[in-house]
Image (tube, rainbow, N blue to C red; front, side, top):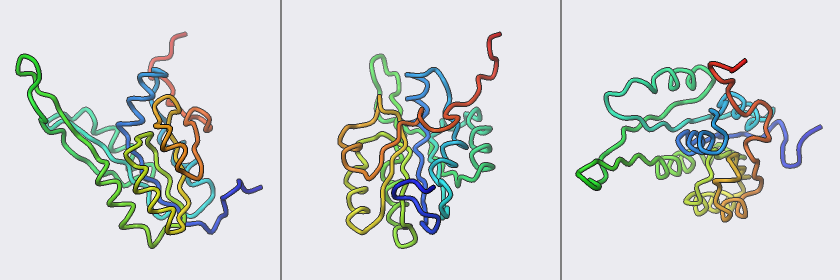
Length: 179
């Protein structure tokens, strides 16, 4: 049985803002997102054209490398960006910025001629405008994110919103489960 709006001939592009989902999972569930389950659910038996995961990392910090490697082995093309110092806060403490929004939007536009469905893994309301452009051109838009941190205007704008904890196996198993 096919889900409403799903058919196996649809060409799908998956765009995942890992920072957005990571912080929501950590802050609300004290867990880590299972990006493999997210990808499997997002594709849902349709034809995957490209899955891209967007990562922000601190220059010189190698702690994200195992995560980046894992994303690449489960089928994501990984795009990386270094944090930059946006400004100096109180006491001269640096305030960092790393934002993939324009890069994600640009990748969606680049792939638009090859996609029937765009799946966004982010709750950021800044994506509403580009998603509306995609829908005006006949592309189905689905969002998988956390209801708690997803902008209502994003939920209202898209064809389908899925609360990430509702997908099968949404979280990674804890590394040291308490027994």
